[in-house]
Image (cartoon, rainbow, N blue to C red; front, side, top):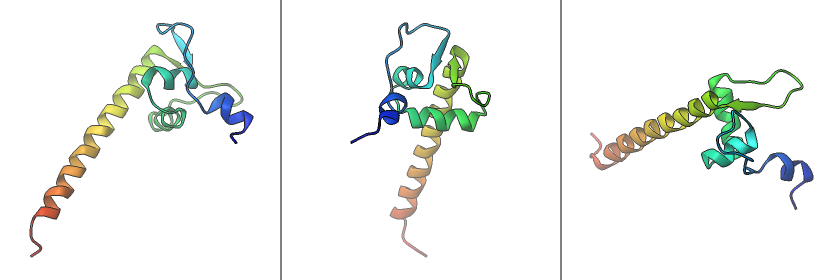
Length: 93
């Protein structure tokens, strides 16, 4: 059974307004259709952090950067998969 903390912070939740300036990580995950952990990893990779003791919130610009970062990484991963598939098809020398 999931803990109360997970139920509160680990699941995406719909925002009150999809066009609001600032959103929590949970609301951002809902808008971007990904997990809360994915949003947190992408924010960390982009260097977007909150002050100690504060909740992490994202602006419209931050959400756009997180979305683009995810698309870029997906394209890079597709290239790697294609290269591996080609390498597997070629006979070993």
